[in-house]
Image (cartoon, rainbow, N blue to C red; front, side, top):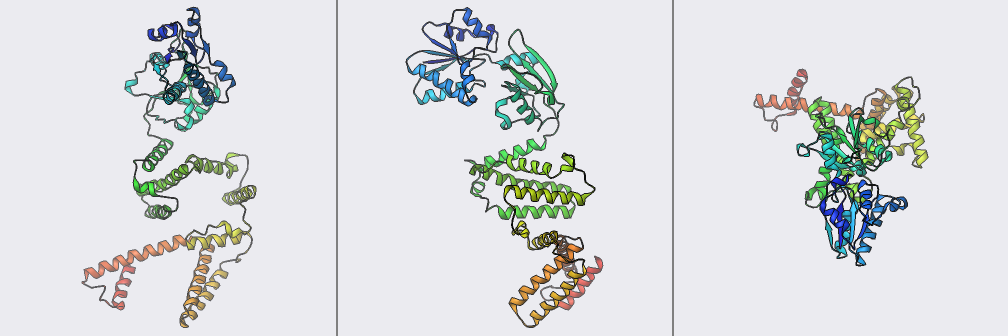
Length: 486
């Protein structure tokens, strides 16, 4: 039989009568997870014989290993027929990994376990800080690191801040959601006569020493949730949709099946930009963000990477490629910025072995045709393969148009396809020299055609003209009228 009891937050007065009876019952093997607790001295004075697992912490590689070793030792004692009392600080059910592990393994090995509730250090901290948890309070574990479910709108109490290393990691996590000057209270030895607290700004959290009995408290604030919290919320929703009991359609998707949606959402963002509609742009950027989170969730399920990885990589890249902002490099203007960017990018490719032998191989073949043509021409220009001025591309347009007309006259289908492509490629060259994005130019032209055709349709309806029956000459009259209205 394994009896698990809590020693309370510190002072012997907080030890429950039930726990004391278990600890002092003759014939029981008593083990304390740690002797660094005021009740341990009290038990010695009361004549209770016990041993601690403090030496496991000195020998173990990490907490997970220590907890596993402690659990195995307790279970081995119980399996040998000895009634065991295992005592932990505070309440056995609060932030006690060893208790969870012992209970799980005991069920598998058919060993009986009794857990007695006790007073945790949380209640002591509530009293010290004057907190009523029923008014809203988040209680978290510092050892959960970036996995903590932070909600800055709620007062938050964080346990297990054992040392400055844990405090440093915790500070970095908190700074993603709170300002550097957000007040933080550190409560030490709650529930004992030596209890004390200090309040400091968040950015100083790791500039003090910590022991085994500290808790960190952050008051909530009413500011709107930051982007980090919202991104975590979106990632959580996506995980739920893909999980058992989620959405069948979402569960069926793969990286490849999502390709068209990624492209569609990107173009809908461009439509919102062209419309100069901020509300629509915010909505469409959200839809595009969903696609990114969707792909990251699939990658996480495959063991490839998590959402944190692309975020980390882009942050590192931006810092690395902006040495004029984050280092001491001086630049004279945007032209030098772009030159540095290309040089740094080339160095990165050479370093990781991804530098292609052909500079044109750096242009993705999945680009839209106009964009691919523009990027290919720009890459060729980087090595000096380009016209000296716009006259060359303009002359090339004339040549390609003449060759296209000849292919049309000869009714050469293959020739028409080839010459039309050459003409489009030459037009892209002209747009590049003119400083115009061909994709945008064509989109504007298409938009103009849409508007004028809509006007033609309206004019035809106003005048009782059936467009399906009208002659081209009649429609041209309406078209010219629409052009005059612009």
